[in-house]
Length: 603
Ligand code: ASP
Image (cartoon, rainbow, N blue to C red; front, side, top):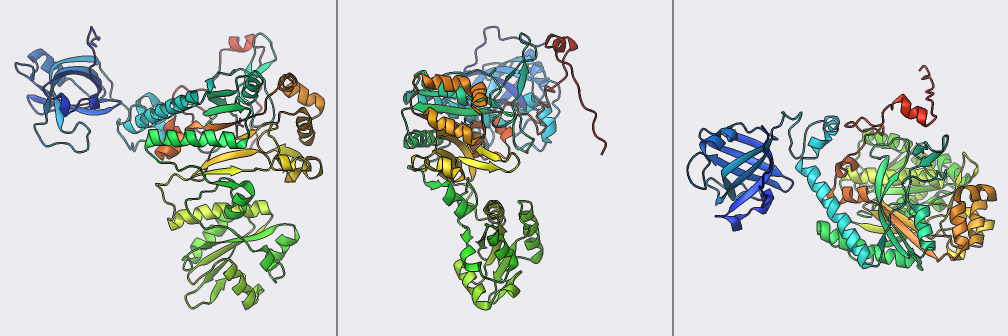
């Protein structure tokens, strides 16, 4: 039968016991990792969230031994039993276990309580589990006992704590904003919650606290932050979660520099304190335009070079229709140099061409510089020797190099070469895995043309401030307007982003017009914010980090699920609790909701 605490107090976590405690009596509690009975002496590994500790049960008299009755109890121990042990700390009798923090000591038990017995778990509780993730997620409460996941969540807590302390010291206030709010269609799809009191009406779960944090600025709380749960009902992509956590902040009376400054110092402190990484300040910056031109990405991984080169000028009069055709359509021709890859087998090159097609390319041209100085190329017959030589020179091509070229609209060329650059770097194994390379990407475009909707949409969100010098372009050439928006990128992953907000009603009105909103539409969706702005609004700006991603990069986890306690899987369901699920018809009745699932179309 399971025993209870009855006044027993834990004195140490398992790995808090050390050689300094030799000779002392300690009380430790946790789960049995494994227990081996060697006839008259039982070796038990005890586990808690700190790690493992070896316990010895040996029958006998004195405080290094256990009584006959309790020894019988110890004989019953199985993996995952929850026990409490009082015992004496001694130096290990046998050889030290170098893999354990407590490898030089052991506890000789003189009393044992079995606090809970345990059924055999469906998979072993161990680091680097080989068990399929599906089974682990179904029993997440067991999976969460595994040391690698525990370490991730312990680090996560430490990071959040560090962020809270830093921001509090900098004068930020932690303020919660509502989870039940109004749906605003701009952005991703909302999760909706039906209202019982207002039948036919719905709340939306926040995609971010954006509007509320701006309201807080209007209300004078000049520095706000929140560890905010956000919800986005997006199409399912690997490693996306329908709910995730942001470290969200907003500041008043600031411009871009102030936001970047406080966040650089925050990152420096948190990375040092939680994983011991030194972050040198100031962090490098790159404009969006340069990031695209040089790396084909708005979140470039700068741990390696292999920069894109624009060769449009060079090839504009050449005889290769793929190049000149793209240029005639307003596009560009750009290339990248895979150093030393001239001998790449044809099969591998073909696979890269296919890879490029996945990013919208119609094809990929390539040229290798052979050891004898001759070229092997998919397009040499369309160009003269001189033209080819000039192209190779522009690409810094040397003997042994393999050059790739994409010709299309700028967007496709960037997408293709940006992805190809990363793929090649992986294949060539040139990415320094241990580096933490931070980068600010600034001056994002304000607007982006949406071909489907035939209108401009906001790249960040409709409240983002244009750059002062680009304001006149808002009416004449909106696609060219740059925004006071910035992203923080770590090793090629977007860690967070934000912007200076529009606080002037005339600019906001122009912005809404640009986005195709009528005044009525703007008023009905964002009226409360626009009204608040009428009563005195300070200039303000902010930023939000994706906390899950930050932790994932810190611990180099393979999946975001490894740094969240109870993640959902790709179809947005929880394998453990089986959410979402049907509800009692009575609940639907109360909400005046009837279910109408369309029949599945025949394949
Ligand atoms: N609310 C924005 C986001 O979720 C971040 C910001 O602009 O502060 O991306």
